[in-house]
Length: 176
Image (cartoon, rainbow, N blue to C red; front, side):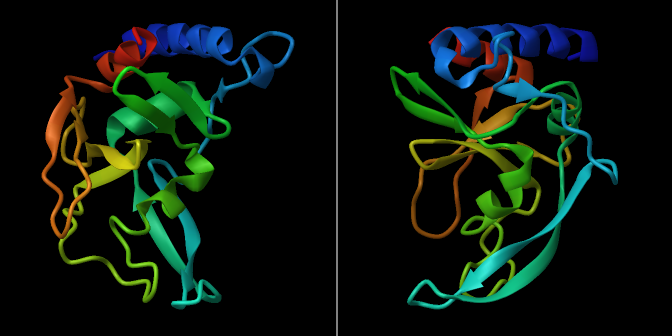
């Protein structure tokens, strides 16, 4: 997948989203996606809230989240500026904005009660979207995809290929 083809697909996705969600766009109709510049390359630095059993914040856990190359390239061209929810025949897909990706990893990559990495999580996967709460991810060791998804369950997630590339995944969303 070239940057040019990803750019074309992202532009088409932006237009499709503007048609699906006209109330969430600006006058140009292009407010759901915008380029996102990461100050330190292909990583996001931030923190998530570690909570107790009553839901009270105990502390902030500082973390670094590396981004898979397809996601990094995509965000440089166009990224969700807020949560984007797309209804499909199979369920609701939620694209998460880069500013919320660290929080999205809680429960997958990191434990929300102690802040530690979850042993059962494969660190190669970075979740960037969900379908009815099920993770949709890319792998850090794959330069062009595929996009993976996994049904919720106990313990280890069993990922299956969802789309051959990030562009193919976005095209799938436009076809719904």
